[in-house]
Length: 289
Image 1 (tube, helix red, strand yellow):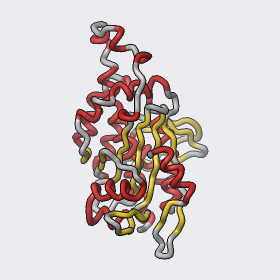
Image 2: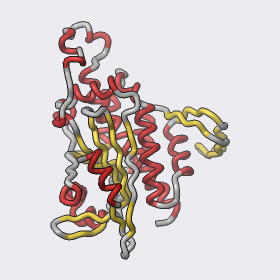
Image 3: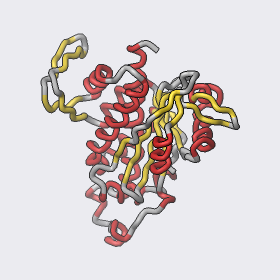
Image 4: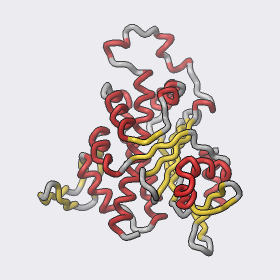
């Protein structure tokens, strides 16, 4: 894959994972934290979070990727309110998984069996079954970035870019970027190799999720949820949000930095495919098992 294509794929995958995951839990939290005009009618016993503790049934694992015939990167996201965490695990399409006793790269499994095949392969290989999936087409990325809002970044050096054929320079220091500027920055800063992309991506994803936690309680969450669901291919339904709404509220209230990247280590196979190292598998199972 050439460098521009790899850069576009990385940006698509990062933005897809971040936007889809944030929106899922925005919708859930909205159910627990209504607008100020309706809060007075709710009895204290219904709003008091100290009477509620989540259990394992509230946990959820999502599989995320680009909506394309051959995604370059995939992401597992684990909503874990029991421990107050959101775990993020990226893996490339040449990671070997086993499906129906046949071991082959994720790319081939996806092409032959679609995303449900990857879900089943993750379960048969690691015992991890993503309950739901989210896929986002590249053409919908700009709209979704702007629907979420601005992103804060601290630049170490001035950053030149071109917007609407007009050259501009973002100055060194704190910058608040809209969707197009953020997308342009990501395109420039992504590493060149797949493994490095995954490492950079998971760390950036965790940082941006934590940065936007305060937006989970804003009254525009419902509109944002509708926009994302209408633009994504997903098997999530309202019930998936509804049964975890208390757990989502609990997580937002107790955790200031819930998102954590699980950085994988790989062993390169003779055919250039990848397998998880023993330590990486242990870390994956500890977070997602």
